[in-house]
Length: 116
Length: 113
Image 1 (cartoon, each protein chain N blue to C red):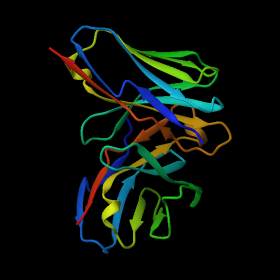
Image 2: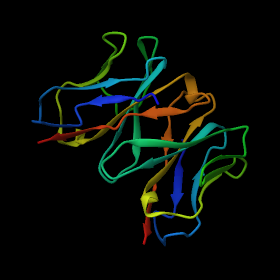
Image 3: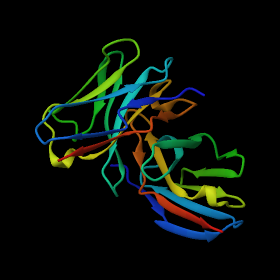
Image 4: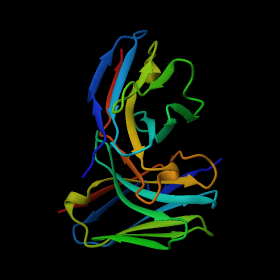
């Protein structure tokens, strides 16, 4: 069964440093997403990406965040200057079409980011 | 703004028991609803997807129902097993509201031997 792959599984970084989280979505999917989950809290939407541009973003996704699809397979989330409150599990997801389609979303296993 | 709530927050049952997890949402104009399973420190595994035009979906011991008019969905787990222990999340997509998922608060399930 196709999977969404995320690397690394864990990342520890110092406050103020830049981090890049990487994802390989399912190859024939068209929509890509980043979500995050702060420990003990709900999973929150960050951004959706389609046709090489952001289609929707939440108020969490400020100027410190950016996404990119640098080639035909990877999808990255960059945090320019990390803050302590960015510590969370970050999930990448993809879907075949808008609104999850008939097959829904597929999520990756997540990257646990710890900012110290 | 769509709010999704799950009750109970935590549930502990003996092995073999049938159980029901509840999910409610405030805006009934949903496109679909998806149930996920999350193991501690792990990712989200999709369990069932219900389109807005459907009333229920079944997969093995799992059955999910949807009542849009009342803003509710239930996940029924038959003959529970210790391996079912996890957090169960429901999430909805609004019709015409973009394609983001709005997640519920989750129900943490423990099935004991």
